[in-house]
Image (tube, rainbow, N blue to C red):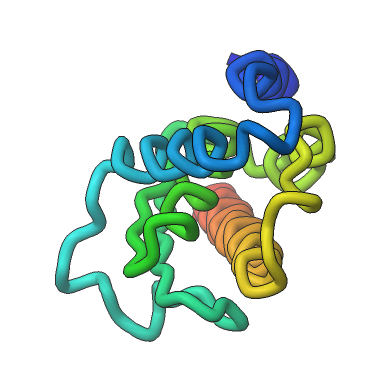
Length: 152
């Protein structure tokens, strides 16, 4: 599914929480999304996979298969885990180019920036940076492998 289609679907899911009165259901939805994440292996809860700059402990692992990036993640905070789950829903299974060039418009549309406190906003930004960094690294590795294969 295209990234914009996924973002549109998320906007539809969160439409029911459009006003401030729906603060608790909004966060329950985020926690539910986090609980749906496939767990990252305990051995990979290490410095390499840790999201730098986040207030919570968040780990993200990325792998490349058939020029598509797939992510797994974990966090020790339910809201942060929901944030990473939401972002992985958008990014996972897409090409590196699409991930790197994505404009995350859904965050504004679901009032994410207005609902989160500064700690979670820091986590959100750190998660996005980690996803894009991991994706860029995988893209470089793939290009290097392609050039080495051509040289042989």
